[in-house]
Length: 202
Image (cartoon, rainbow, N blue to C red):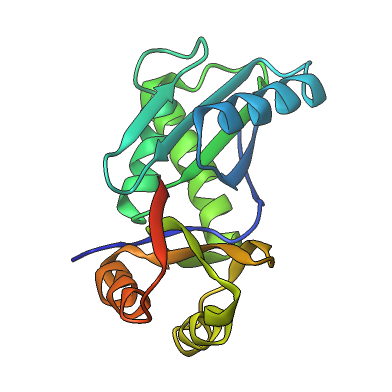
């Protein structure tokens, strides 16, 4: 089962110039449309004097959600070449925004496509790309006397506890790579007297 994907480890920037038009590219890892909109708002505020803020994103490695936006450039000359760079580099949960400062000379359809493609490509090349995994989010509930047994499994499987409450009944949250979820939850159930609930699928 394929449950891995490539995305940006941290924000990256790229640049391209053609006949005095400057194209500033910004690449980000994102997981929701809300994140995309927040980043766009910040860039539009910071680069408020730019002519265009064009972008493309791909979200959700299991059921892709995507969008391309030309922001006033001729249709297909900006958002599409940015999106194609994401696809050709196998990037998902990723956003690239290219901010254009118009240099006074029209570049034509071919020139625009090349400029947006090149700016996005430069951001990708300068960025750090990492492999991430689709994970399921589980909540474990069990009596305190089972804590050591549960923690041993989590440690053996290199799983992190994202939230915990240690009382007479303990509650732990953890994320498990989707392809390994069945095997690991079976190990947990083998302890006995444990509740394993899937609370979120990323």
